[in-house]
Image (cartoon, rainbow, N blue to C red; front, side):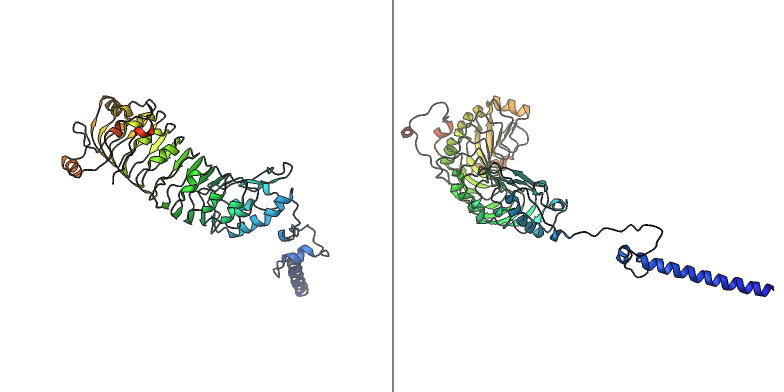
Length: 422
């Protein structure tokens, strides 16, 4: 009897185990575990599971989505933006992840406004990519295809190539900043045909060749072309300009400082000419820069005396001629400038400073280290100074250095022409 009962229990155990395995296999097939097809279980309306599966709803691909734009002008630039997005090779900050959908005005870096020709329309009016660290081989087909753009700022990215001549067709563009990128090639001449442009910043790139003199007579308020590889003489035929801020530093500009440039740039507030290859003497016309707050011509090869006409630059706060070949006495009238906060004349060959200049030395305003001033510390050796003065440098007659144009203006016939030093 006990044998029969044991046999029946064994049969029952085997049957239950088989049923359990069959149920598990059925469950796996239903929810897609057994064959790796999760969607089969999610789409099967005939399963009898006692619980609800957490399945994702099917989504419509973005390519098939019908986009609705607030204005036809936005609809026209949408494919242009998306094409540019596809060309971006690096986006470490995830900027382009926001460039999705029809609300272009909410894309990061894009700003909308009413265009001048239709105050009821909506268009891309400005772009600010500053510091986005985007990389792309070119801006061609993007910037030049935004017809209503007024401001384009894209400094501190990794854009390269050259600027398309078609940017001249952007009738509203008045600020263009592509500084600190990897642009190359010649100066972008297209900007010469943009009379509405008032701000141009192409510094810290790899542009080469010459700079057209016409750019200095454009209706620009600011021109920043420093830290490129331009190599030309400064133009001497400029009659008039509107520029207030001019930076030409860290290029390869060479030759003398033209007299006419100071007459033309009399309204300049900031002039940066440092780290170029300028030569010759400083003309007295430099005193015509009456509005200048900063003048920096450090690390060039300028020589001769400092002209007394610097006393006319009454707004000067920073004046730098360090690292040149200047000599003689530091003019007391320069040290008497009331707003002067920094006067750097180190690394020259000056031989004398007067009482007012010595006061500025004590205050830390005037730096005359590494000159040839006998009674001051931190000067050049006697041998080094003697070797410099053994090779005379010829400059205009001494009267031009003492002439201060803001004190009186004699007629042009009474002012002799100045010959710049070789």
